[in-house]
Image (cartoon, rainbow, N blue to C red; front, side, top):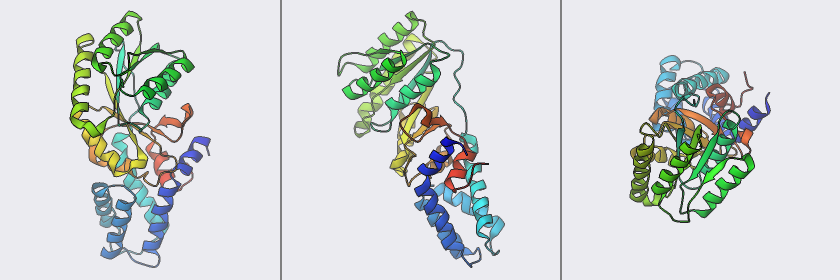
Length: 305
């Protein structure tokens, strides 16, 4: 078993324990009937899989299992397969295309791990590409400092302005510099003040408009970072940011130690947005490409296939 899978399994242990022990409690010496199906649906919802995903899973499961004897292991296998089916369309790798510079707009609420994720992705891509970072979260000095630390650590140029400066103007100047330096990839960090939704929406739209003045087909990707520990709030954040910008992919952080790991299923079912990466810790190697089979195996406490 890989070290990564062990860490993922450990990170999802709270979610896995709730789910698997709940299934055992529901079906011990009982048939699959309307009562057990109702209890199972409640379990899936309280495990943060979301109402829509839970209903879809129960409907599929009931069509095969209603009024039949309940074999606990078979039930877990079937449920795992149903969850995998929901996740399948969202398992898409993040691909850098030939546009140069390839502009990646990073969005997400403060505290979700957005700036750290930029640093990790930049470090992963640095070997094959010349990269720069634009620190457009201009009202949060800590975010700029954090980005600078990642830049210094990986010898990546960080373009920043004065504290509180206009984020769109900074992006304009930063992209002009990126073109001048012949950069391959540019990451743009942005503010995440969701408590001021209107202000944030206006700022992001202005940034996108300015980006297009320099590079008309940019941003080429808009990646939203969400914090798994926030459960259903993470789903609400995805829906909110979708109203603001064209979110092309998701990165789900902080899966280590959360009891809300099922939120990935809810997000997949209700938004259909590709999930590119998941994170289970602070290290660069703890941000990994999303693998639905690996995730589901960890969710049900299985050994890796």
